[in-house]
Amino acid sequence: MTTPTPPTPEDAAGDESIDAGPPCVICFNAGDPSGAAGLAADVSAIVSVGAHPLPVTCGAYARDTADIFDHFPFDDEAVAEQARGILEDVPVQVIKVGFAGTPEAVGVIAGVATDYTDLPVIAYMPSLSWWDESQADLYLDAFRELLLPQTTVLVGNHSTLWRWLLPDWSGERSPTARDIAKAAGDAGVSYTVVTGIPLPDQFIDNVLCTPVAVLASQRFERFEAVFSGAGDTLSAALAALVANGADLTSAFTEALEYLDQSLDAGFRPGMGHVVPDRLFWAQPEAAEGESVTPEEAQALQVFDMPAHDTKH
Image (cartoon, rainbow, N blue to C red; front, side, top):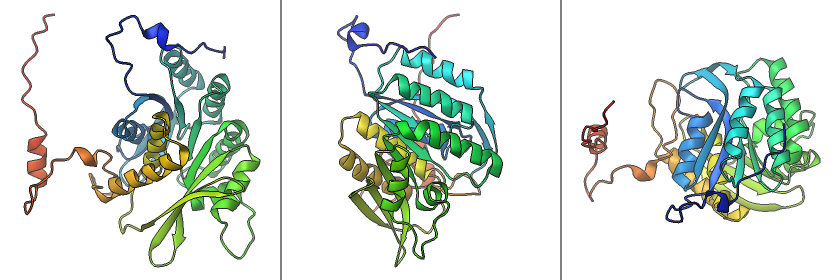
């Protein structure tokens, strides 16, 4: 892959009346027909937080709102061409990585990160328990060897990161967030966000740390519902906040607050898990003492659009 030349603001300044717009986040992930995770989560969370997503499709899940049945990966050259084309056109502030699908696609993303060393890489590792074990092992090995050395922030659930980064853990206690961050640091990761750490009384902890220190933590009461897409939502929001110039600790805190509100407003579109409402702030508000039914909310979102006068 040849080293591309990123465009400068001057290159796009032909019309000074055009606003530069929000910062851009390129996100590598899988298409998700349920709208719960993958690129659907990336796009809606990034837009909601105030950045512009540049979605690169690495493949597609076959799934419903409860389970992932299969994944159909794109050829690595298709992933590379998507990324190369948009990066040579649009200035990007952050690289966000979700499920790339194959070791080859991981290699493509690692190549992009190498070409753009000034861009922070925020990588989320989802649970791969649905996948064939041998394929998952090959993918995780490639991710560790090729992408973790270039990852600025690694995001993942406590149990997922524990099984991946500390498979031989033999202590009587569970590994702490710092234990996991140390293992990630050995692979080259600067910062680690560990989510879903079990606490007493139905609380969970979420921690931002380096291999040597805990930088911030937030505790939330555990929801009774089972959600799909929480990890992609958090990591995408974090990427968008960093792209907007927030320091990492503030971005971590704000991204968690955003996720908490998205989960609190979550809904069940099918017969499976609850999906975060990443546009919770756009829902119509009821007057004091009144409530808005789902039918009324839908009616309020219908706009009277005039027919266009385009002639073919």
